[in-house]
Amino acid sequence: MSELILTDEQIAHFDNEGFLILRATEHGLIDTAVLKTWTDEIRNLPREHGKPRPRRTPTDANRTENFVAYHPGFSSLLNGQPIRNILKQLTRDDMLLFKDKINYKLAGGNAFDAPAYDHIGEIQHTTANLAVDPATVENGCVEVVPKSHRMNVDLVEGGRIDPDWEARQLWIPVELGSGDLLIFGSHLAHRSRKNLTDRSRASVYATYHNFSDGTDLKERYYADRRENFPA
Image (cartoon, rainbow, N blue to C red; front, side, top):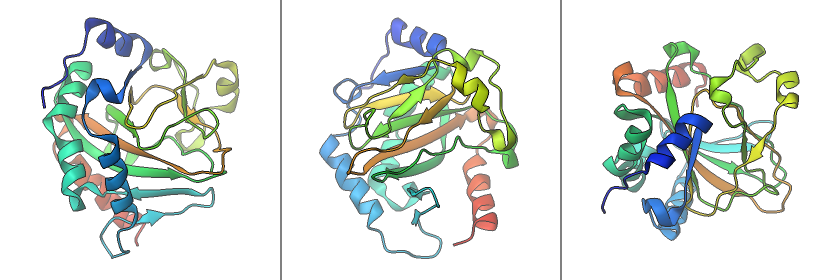
């Protein structure tokens, strides 16, 4: 496939607003039916030590992490040059996959927490959120505060956004169709609401770090996960 060349306006939007939306018909990274099939394959993998598995939390946030190494299709998609070329145009640096997960937002399920990577030092990272199923206001799509990557966001314990700061901001819902791509940087304030529908939805989250930050961050991250959150 031919690689997508972003417009000056798209790059400026990412720089100024902190995020960019690319519709499935525009980026052409993957067929939506194939994306759904691959996601079902990952979710149905047998539970084996050391391999990806669904993780449940008390908030019903069901997810599968570190699956790319076990699925050639997803590996080609998320490590491939087409998506990394898009990210390089936005970040001006070569990007390496750092963390991969699929969130299955169950009916009535709560939001996910913003990630913290303190154990590997402070890094700049960029997330590509690929919607497997449509993400709507009703089922708890991502919401962002435009330009917040240039603000001093007040944080509380655990790196979470201070509720007082959160309440003062104008949050914009980012609705996505199946296959649409939302790209945002590490400093953009984002959240999601509960899924108020009777159907679950899945989203792929691929987080990338700058090549200049090193080449072993993914291994260090998952080594820490295995040590502190064993199967």
